[in-house]
Length: 463
Image 1 (cartoon, rainbow, N blue to C red):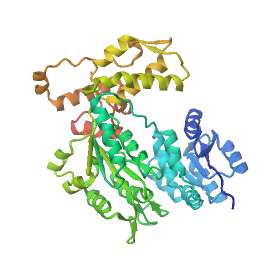
Image 2 (image 1 turned 45 degrees about the horizontal axis):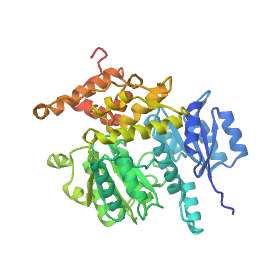
Image 3 (image 1 turned 30 degrees about the vertical axis):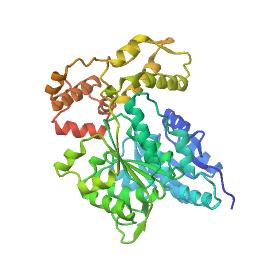
Image 4 (image 1 turned 180 degrees about the vertical axis):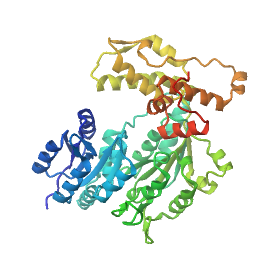
């Protein structure tokens, strides 16, 4: 049997912009993508091309995506299907899984989410085994990730250079677990990728999991996998992240949000490199490295009995702390120039210049969202700019100078400050939770938790 060079993916969604963007993400990788915006277009492609994976929207013009799923699983039983939807509920998820869908993603999702879903499909695993038998050096996923993930390290400050040195040192010890701490938006996942791709595990999978983005009821199944029939909706055996990361790196983001009930199992798996799928008794040996990250004070979580001290000791063999951007202002200008070059090329707006006013003003800005906020500001500015010069008016947020003295800083109530920032972000975004969480540089689920914690209600007349 001849080995095909690329996995063929059909994206069937009625939003043309979505199919084009996702197809653009696959371009130049080890996947060959095809686009269809109607059921008829999709069926025509399926008749003419041997598709390995179908990414299918559950809502299409004049037809239910689940009906298409049912049809294609009969006609093309060897093809994997990932269902996507902006309006999904648990009933839809269960129906899709029962009809043979391999995975389900809710819009909006990050490209890394679809990447992880593809990595876990049967077709991918079969191709990976065939490639290994041919003794090819690079697996599909390592090559794709290296091409798609921005792992460039930008910074000139002594603090960030120290972080880089610590990361490269960690890369030389592939079995040592690493804990990365720092505020949201400082680039913790980027450092994790540098560690992975600079070390001996670089040719194996790097899998990023946000502990707060997956519901507690599904998290154990996602991490450890499950056996068919172990719970409602478990229509097939499923490999978990620990098992999929055999030989590679599992990045557990927002580790402080990991449910206490799972922490003991995570500890055992980390110590013994043995996992058991949900609903099974057989143990599975897997060789992985854990890199974890949090923006919380994990010591306080331990004091409040929300995080296990023994798990912390296992996870932070090496500890890397990334200082916030406001503490290293000398990194602002290099980052500003880097993002400006990147987005001017992406949006085909060459020869853009940045005014001195922008550099001077951003040097005084507090950057609560850190590097992520700076990146978003530059992207929006370049999208909205009309001429060849970026001025301060091109930026959607007005920088505010932090002028408090040391005495003033000591008197600031962090809780009050956080509540104020959340209320401002909600007001400016007209109470759109996704837009507000993007402005704050945190995940939407994290924003919802903070609103619940501080009893912040959606009130259209709030200022």
